[in-house]
Structure formats: C-alpha cells, structure tokens
Length: 469
Ligand code: NAD
Image (cartoon, rainbow, N blue to C red; front, side, top):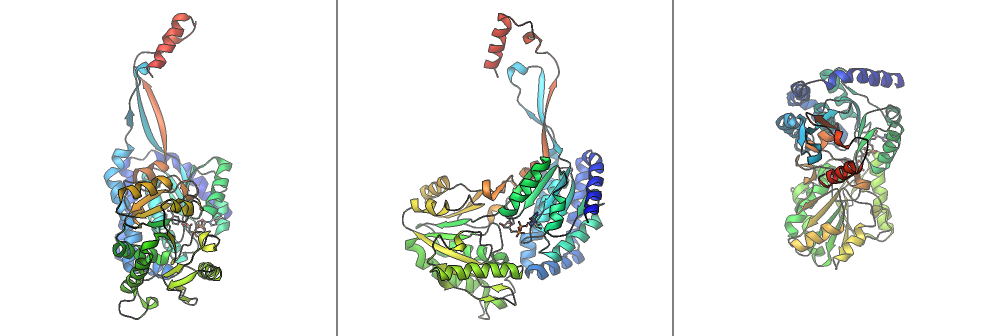
C-alpha cells in the first residue's frame, strides 16, 4: 500500500503541470463526468443501496443530503467557473502609475481530501468537484467506516478518471497516516477536531496548506419570543435527520425557562408526527436512519448513561436497540456541565435541554466549550438576535431554522478556531484549492526617480509618494 500511495502521488505530481494548463472548458468537462454518473439510474440505485447499508438512509435523504447537494454545487460551478477563473483586476495606487495589478487564481497542485462517514458521498464529492474545477490533481481517502459508500466512490472515480488525475485510496487510519507523509500542496480534511489537529501537525512537516472542516457543540438558543410550535418541529427534524449524525445538527438546546414546558410537548408531538404517525414505533419508520457502527452506538449509550447517573432525567425517547443500532430521538432534562454529554460533541439523536432566565446566562453556558460550527437562534426579537450573535462567536448562524448553514453556495461554510479553518462551498471552496497569485504588470513609467544617489529631493519624493499609497 505504501508503494501504491507513493506511485499515485508521484504520477499525480508529474501530471500536475499538464492538468494545471487545462482550460475552464476541459475542467468543467471533468466535473460533468461526475454529474452524468450520478444521473445514471443504475449508478443511482447502487448508491441508494450503499447508503442504505451504511446508514439505512431513506431515499429522500440520499437525494436531499447527498446527491442533490453535489449536483447543486456542480450547477453552481457551471454558472460561475468562467467568471471565477478570470484574472481579477484590482485598483492601482497613484505611486504605481503605469502598472496594472490583478489576482490570478491558480491550481495548488496535488491535493488530498480526507472525508468522514456521516455524509460519505456529499463530503467526498463536494470538495472533489471544487478541487477539480480549480485544476488540481486529487487523492481522495473516504472514511473506512462508511465502507459501502467508500467502495462505491472508488469504483466511480476509477471509471471516470485516470489515477494520475483523480484517485481514491481506501483504508483506515494507517492509510491516512501514510498519505499524510506525502508533501501535498493542500489538504482538505472533514472530520473531528481531534483528528484535525493530527492532520494539521502532519501538514506542518511539508508546510502544506489546510482546510479543516470540523465539528463541535452547536447550541440552539430559543428565547421567550420564539414561535415554539414552528421552531420545535424544525428542530426535531434537524436533530433526527441522519439520526443526529450531522456536523450542523443542534447539539443542545438553551431555552428560556418560560418556554420549556411548551417546547417539550411540541417536541414529543413533532417526533410522533414525523416518525410514528401510525403508531408502529420510530424504530419501524422507513424514514429514520441508524447509528453508523457499534462503536458509535456504545459511545452514545455511555453519554446517555453518564448523564442519567449524574442526575439528568429522561423526558422522551431513550430507546436503545444495540442489535439494530437504533437510538430514538431522546430529550434530556436536568443537565449539568460536568456531564460527559456537555463536554463532547454528541453527534447522535440525544438532545440535552438547559434553561436560562437572563440573556447573559446564555454566553456563560456556551463559552464552556470551544467556538461552535453553528449557533442557532430562535427569536422574533431583533435585539435578542443581535445580542446572542454578538456575544457568541461561531462559524455560521441560522436564525429561526436549522441545518440551512450548508445550503447556500453563495455563503462560506466552515468553522472558527476549534470548529475549523478555511471555508467550503462556492467561490470560497474554489479559493481553498487555488493559489491567489498576485501579478503586477508594468506597462510604462518606472520608480527610477527614487533610486540612489539619495538626496533631500529623493527623501521628499519618497515621503510624498507614501502619502498617496
Ligand atoms: P474522524 O475525524 O474520525 O475521521 C475523518 C477522516 O479522518 C476519516 O477519513 C478517517 O479515516 C480519517 N482519520 C481518522 N483518524 C485519523 C488519524 N489518526 N490520522 C489521520 N486520519 C485519520 O471523523 P468522523 O468520525 O468520520 O466524522 C465525525 C466528525 O466530523 C464530527 O466531529 C463532525 O462534526 C465532523 N464533521 C464536520 C463536517 C463539516 O463540514 N464541518 C462535516 C461532517 C462531519
């Protein structure tokens, strides 16, 4: 394997200068191969099967959260790549008269994409199409945990590309470690902050640039002015999609004390309406996913038990079926900060509820953990929205809804400090894979008048020139 990785890396490096020269049309043609592949009925049905086997994903979620997102990004590229790839003229300060300045977006070279298991197609192919569009060669290592989708990606990419352009390398941590020994020009990592630190440490050996799309505890604030029936239904869905295994899922709720009782009632009825409308149980709903693996099931189970042991009480849910890797949407009350569930990202369908009375208490709770990927605010009061946003840094914010942070390609998506470095989606993602080369082209004139011999006249001129900069 080590040899294979070296051979692939070297071939991509050699091929890189050719790929770099490609026109936008040629790059788009490569991107469109992925689009056509995903539109093919046979391929799509194999994908449904793979994602069902990995996470028991329902068909609608495969389209809404995996394939649809990739295709939306490809459409966005189709509309914008020509414009992005053009040289971008910038203004010229007076002392530089006679020159023209512009930014040229160039491919970085050979890039590594490391992706997670929770949206294994989306989070592999979205960075991949942007890396391709920016003119790079790519090695993708999908997560070994979503093994069916990883195998699907391997087959897909090897059918569509020569491996000296784009290659999928499957494998576990040992393979990721070997890959990280290579001097990549850029590493795009999506996963946990813990592994993000390892990736960044390895990247430092070669001074490879990094994009780290990480996670963290994303709080959902609900104030006393929020429309509780509406917001709770939205939140119940957001916490249950993919069985809560979503980086942008609300991790815990901080709700105004006066609204807690109503919230609990609404949450119960929302879950029933969404997954148990006919009374056969959420576990029998075809619309509800499963926990990815036994290890992750046990981790969630131990967070739950630890919370109960330390004084939390179960409000609703609490069904754990190990054989089936099923956990029902679970609401917990009586939460305190020393519980494990408040120390690490939950990444599952467990939802702790914390109450507050004064706005200032909210920041105290949130600041116990590092800056989150998303901060959700449910409120109909502008002043409160501003107050919560000003006091709590986050990668992004959605007001009066959930999940939407990863939906608009015109907005950058990503974290801040512990929840990530760099941004994904749209132009921002294209930029992650591009070197912003600055070019100054002298067309006439020169700076000759400030060359030596220096005298009082030159000194005066230099001082004056800087006043015009
Ligand atoms: P993870 O960090 O365990 O793994 C991600 C990738 O890193 C996988 O390909 C894995 O094989 C590889 N890896 C694991 N250990 C490694 C090591 N020691 N050295 C090198 N590579 C290693 O993450 P996960 O469990 O797959 O995904 C869950 C995490 O990802 C959560 O924290 C979630 O919030 C985050 N996430 C973030 C985003 C985002 O866009 N910000 C999206 C999805 C998931």
